[in-house]
Amino acid sequence: MDRFPDLAAVRTAIDALDAELVALLARREQLVRAAARFKTNAAAVRAPDRVEQVVARARSLAAARGASPEVAERVYRAMIAAYVELELSAAAVREDGTAGSSSP
Ligand SMILES: C=C(O[C@@H]1C=C(C(=O)O)C=C[C@H]1O)C(=O)O
Image (cartoon, rainbow, N blue to C red; front, side, top):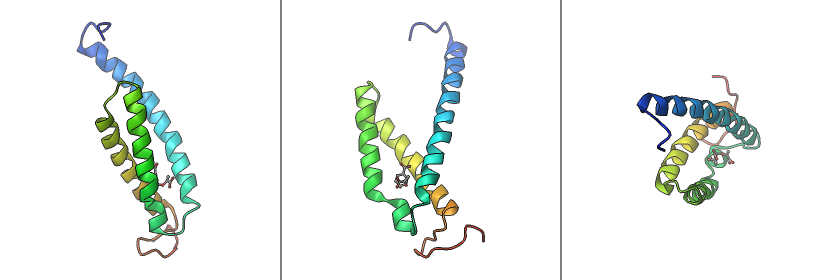
């Protein structure tokens, strides 16, 4: 990382990378919304076994890239928690397990 002459240059690179990252988040959100359409209750939305599988994979992929598995895990857990909230509000799913309209 000696290619950066100063902090401003590093931040310019971070901003460029964030644009890519948010584009990927937009694609991931579409997939999460697609998954939500197959779910009829809150337990299926939360899918704790799947969460552990996704987190374990993220840790492993991070390690393979020389990145911190701990950071990857924390980012993934925060991201998935946000997507679960999105699914619960977007899907016709209520916390009590009953199906319902997404409008109040
Ligand atoms: C997208 C799903 O639903 C939720 C969101 C997940 C995710 O963002 O990866 C994983 C499991 C669920 O908590 C799914 O079940 O695959």
